Amino acid sequence: MGWLNSGIDICASGLTAQRLRMDVIASNLANASTTCTQNGGPYRRQIVIIEARQNPRDFKSLLQDEVAAFSGVRVKEIRTDNSPLRKVYEPSHPDADEEGYVSYPNVNVVAEMTDMISASRSYEANLTALNSLKRMASKAIELGR
Amino acid sequence: MKIGEVSNQDVFHLGTQGQEKRPETSFSSYLQNALNQVSSLENDARMAAQSLAAGDAAQIHQVMIAYEKAYLALGLTIEIRNKMVEAYHEIMRIQM
Image 1 (spheres, chains in turn green, cyan):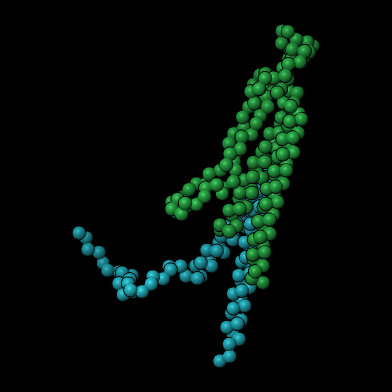
Image 2 (cartoon, chains in turn green, brown):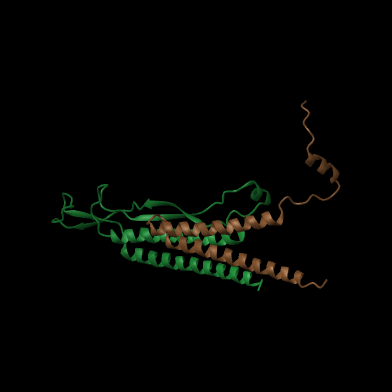
């Protein structure tokens, strides 16, 4: 059912990717001042790496040399941001080091908020494309009436 | 070399070699196949809704997309059915 699946699945992959990005941003925001984790040390910012999805190419599409780009996106990996942590002088804090400094996560709340707006707008854009595809299909079906 | 029996089909093909080869699928099997696809789309939608309700990994948009796919496929099926019934009525209206 190519008429139904191709475009809609691309939009669905975009929705899933943006949804995951949103989850990761939410995790970053929630842990913006987490000073200890199970792995030890403060929380580190997580970044979502998104890549273009390659179609599994069958022999027929190779023969016809179809464009492999029409296949949506997927999340390649969730990487840890290793940029330096924020040091704050708080000698009374239980996680403070010998010199009295506490390492806070390398999460910038303002940057996370802009990322969140970007993810949410991107999600909406995918939804709009999906609705448009759906409307096109319904209009095509109306040809028969 | 092994000599196999000559099946009916081989003889049939020998006889019609000059003619154009007809497609193998009949209309009824084609229709059956299409209906099965529509039915499987509806099944997918039901399974997606079930896994969402059960708290599995399925996400809301996946369920809604599955339902939309099933809805569109059913709409196309209904239109085709209407066209077929219409054609049948046209033929029945022929005066003998």
